[in-house]
Image (cartoon, rainbow, N blue to C red):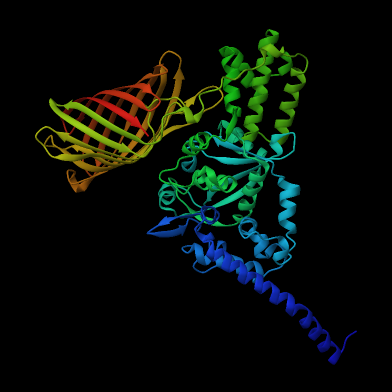
Amino acid sequence: MLKGGAISLFFFALLLISAPAKAAEQTKLSLHLKAAEEGKLYQERYWSILLHYQSHRGGSRSLIDDPKFFLSPEGKDNPQAELAATLEAFYNGAGRGDEHPICRFPARYAWLKEQLDAADADFPEVDCQDFKNKRDKAVQPKALVLVFPSAYMNNPASMFGHTMLRIDSDYQSRLLSHVVNYAAYVDDSGILYPVKGLLGYYKGYFKVFPYYERIKEYSDFEQRDLWEYQLNLSDREVQRMFLHLWELRDIYSYYYFFDENCSYNLLFLLDAARPSLGLTASKAWVIPVDTVRAVKNSGITTDVAFRPALSTRIRHIASLLDGPSRAKALEIAEGKADPAHLQASDRDKIRMLDLAAEMVQYQYNKGKQTKETYQTRYLSILRERSRTTLPQAERYAIPVPPAPEEGHFSGRFSLGAGVNNGTPFQEISYRPAYHSLLDPERGYGEGSQVVFAETAFRYYSGGPLKLERLNIIDIISLSPRDDFFTPLSWKVRTGLYQTLDRGDEERLTYQLHPSVGLAYKNTAAGLVYMLAEMNFVAGGLFRDNYALGVGVQAGVLKRFTGSWKMHLTGESMFFELGDSFQHHQLAAVQGFALSQNNSLELSLSWKKTFHNESSEAKCSWHYYF
């Protein structure tokens, strides 16, 4: 054991040994800083990709908001300072092992080393064991797949659909792959949830999950079909993506529903893999299906696979059976009938048992059956099912719907003309997002409407140009009920709208109009619905400047062909609080799809408010972009 002066002598010897090495490192750092400055590496686009820089007021600003992501206090707005601080941290940074900046920022390290024509030996030796274990043993990145879960109307954050990246490895089953998900993490909900999401009140994080967990959540629980787009990225490019993903772990940026959302942030990972894609070069409204289109247009997609949701499989099998057979399958799933006592042809018996098995699994996923009940019923159905087989040619071929990117674009510009109570008018409107009931249905869900920030101006002959409506939010979810699924239909609309006053003049009012009810689908009639409604309206035309009423709306949405559909609706509202009056309205609207991004809309409407009647006919041309 060393004592006293021996200890001092020992550390003095260590200092003599380490001092030249440290001096050599600082010399290399100085040379690298000089080369980086002379080469203006901070102006290189790949550096902007790695730091998520965007043009901002004549300079640059990162979309990352977490200060832990930056090694310079000025890093969010100063690419030059951040690059210098990164090189300095590689040599002088605190932390051992995976806490060292070289391990924390492997994408920056790999790129700077390549640009400076340096080797690992030119930098301090660090053992990044955690990073290596995650990359080489857990995830094993080999290929990438863009995954698009379809829209889910019962979650405001998922009304536009979603995008994820699946990282495939050498595993035979893709269910064992990992998936990269960027999402807002919230601890509240309610009416303020979409408002906060629009204004960026929530933090978004990248997370990595096993793919089978996402399938269970999206496909089995939320009834969302999945689309999988294979990407032709090389192994080296996939590795680059993973390096950048590692840098983003536990790092937040503020989440905005329309632009800095799941779809746009995901594009940075693809640009990090192959910077020539330029997917993040421009930014406006970015909706998940826009990301799918952008990736397809870049030319890196190969195969496309459709993974139907559990509910889609249930509905398809049910469509192959008559009413009594469907009812018997449901009885089996609910434990009210014995699967061994089915009286039917072999084909129908198999379909009934398959339908019952799928329904038992769905009910268990939704928490409507205990694990013990699920196992008992499921095994009894499978036992009976195993006694016979369906020939391969007769197996269920679930029809593949049009892919989401085949639908119309998200933005809409409209020109219209019509007559209101005998007075001609012209109308112009703009809507940044996303889809309405009468828009071309291809690639979208039937009975769904998500409209944000629709603004319309109208000009009457001899009068001034005026704001006709400002649809801040106009969402409709008409979900048909059947023997197997019993969802509620609902809508919510809020914004500024023209309203007839007692003097038969139109005046601008604010409205908040929620509704809830039931919808059913009939082959002949179409989608039939009835909603109980409440409407709060505010404006100077009302006594006490507001009115609160309740009422009912009924309607039919019928698709005649792939390009022609009609919406018939009637509504009655009875206002008693704040002001007392009635409002009644009838409307017939037809939509005609001319092409993917062009449509015509013809409407006839009649309304009566404060005993004043108004009738209108209008023709509109819609262009989607």
